[in-house]
Length: 363
Image (cartoon, rainbow, N blue to C red):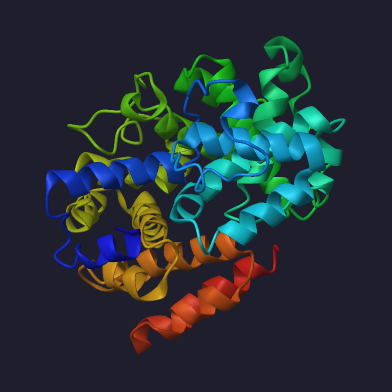
């Protein structure tokens, strides 16, 4: 079953059974770029150069990780992305794992090239810019924490677009948050304070966002160990506990966990967001829109159907805004996002298009 079909099964706002809920959680593991630790027998020989993982009937993430890392080492980043794009329409696992795969292409690129700017110069935005996040994960994995924190502002300084806060620059600082979280042993509050060492509110917020996303990735069933900062009985924690200056960055991610904790119940997560204080409630709904886009694999009808599970204009409008932003980020184009806007009820179309236009200027 693909996730467009799964979305269709969710017309009442709930996944129908435990097996579907399990598939939903597995999807989020892969969508968020989880670094699954898999021992592939024979190292890179686990996936031969001539045969894809699909041809080998090996659906494990470890096979795809090794396969694309080997392409980068042998032929470079462009060859890896050409292969990825060629198999995206024909291999369902590539479609589902795409963002996670691009993380590993980025990590392999950092090993191959000399520094972040050169690795970024070889980059590709395909599948929600995961490549750039991976480059930063590669960088931080080999950096000493003390020296990194002493020169935080310098890490992304040479990436184009710093002055205008371009998407490329954002991806760098966001990826830095992922890396800092890992360097602190997944200590969320410590990592947030480390991000505060950056100069500039935009930079700090992007870094915080990476920290919160990494916190979701290290959930026990997903990453092989347990985050101390996730509570299934309180799905919006830690957003409910962090300082006010961190709450927007937290709520931008947390609904992904809330959906897993509620077995994919969009209606229930809308209700959870409704209980959030007014300054952050819209962000919570927008995060749920990002989830709707992600669960539908950025397909318009299923995304609209999930946002329509919201009650009232505030919920539905912010949901479609979040979904439209995810379409922009995923495709690195406004065409699909505008297609989404066109499919909405008339009262929402204008605001959706305004959101797309304002954000696409950053690209």
